[in-house]
Image (tube, rainbow, N blue to C red; front, side, top):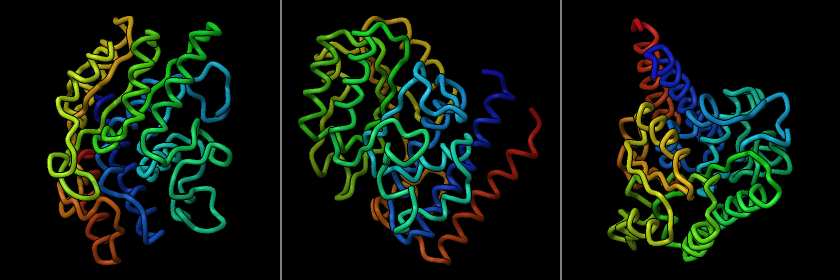
Length: 282
């Protein structure tokens, strides 16, 4: 990847993270930890990879995206806002009674949202259905999904995986946001699905393991995905709360909003990282 392109993606991802903090603080509720961990993945998909058009969110040949870990909606909303699907000012209305931006994605009211999600395990099943439909009707769009590692404890995930593998849905790519934390503790403490790669491979998927914060690795994984004739699971090792010091690897920030003081600290940290990036030469 060209250095200038990578730098622009890094800048955009930091703006997305600022949008996440802005929304969750304003709502006084939400899920910042897992939103921050998948920010680089979703930023890359929307700004570099997927065939989409903010001016025509429902165009028939667009690639589809499903946030199966729907509680990380603050990240998706911040990406959509930065990409131009709606004004960034709307992020401050997160979870307000009259806002379109509720706690989980809503395909009926939010431009750019392809599937309403929230109940863990159901999003990947919807993504499988979209991919199957495209195969059946000869449509050329691809389907991308992001799942949480804790979400893999849901049995429905593996029913969907079995079906996708048996149907050879090569137009489906699933990212596993593997930050190793869920609401009740570490994955190992709660109910680990490891080894994740071997399980997906048993269901006839191609698997790739990457650093989910490295844009070069994200790009290479998606390029590799296009070369195989089966669904692809990209296991992205990430840091929960990435780029906000007191949230990194802290399980208590799975579903909590920062107070005014911690909001200021988070925004100051993110702004400093943004300023540093913008000063750097390419």
